Image (cartoon, rainbow, N blue to C red; front, side, top):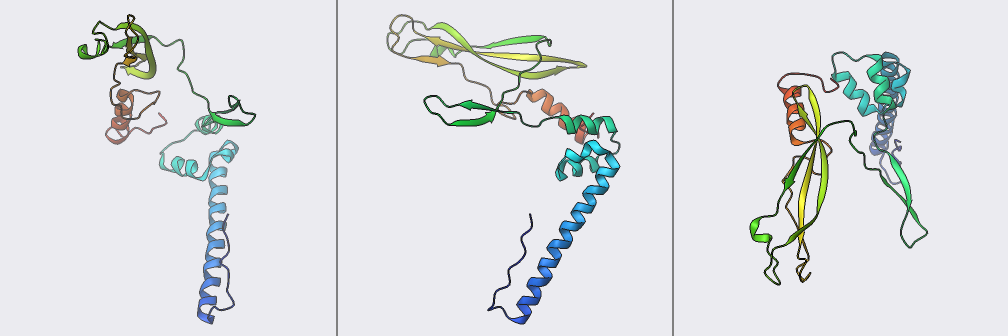
Length: 202
């Protein structure tokens, strides 16, 4: 919401005039933005009413946008929130619900092992045993076929003394950390957008 510029009693006549002109300019900009939004909603249909001004700006950059695509964009919740109770407290907080990839997609697992130097217990010198994996999923792509890449990072611990704690295989650096899509999809999307000139909605 635009706040009007306040006029102070100590302001000179020139400053008062400039402040009034600035307030009028703010109101004019707000009116023009609302008029532009109404024109875009009339252009893209009633479903676009729930889109933000930034989303409507992105639609203007696309050469062709169908009514179905606008309706699908408007019906998509960009961030699903749920309310959960904090342990030991009566307060409740909201946080983002983690989305999972479809179960129907084929999985290709890749196990990342600890380096050999870290597979030895630092306390007793014996080999560490695999006690589990830290698993993460990213949406990968093959030509005309989507898959889910499952990366399991090996976790090892000594079963003899238990003094050295748990060691986990290092995770590889990624373009977007904790993203559900792999680096391959990000690279392919950038190439399609800026080299092949394919709109992102396709």
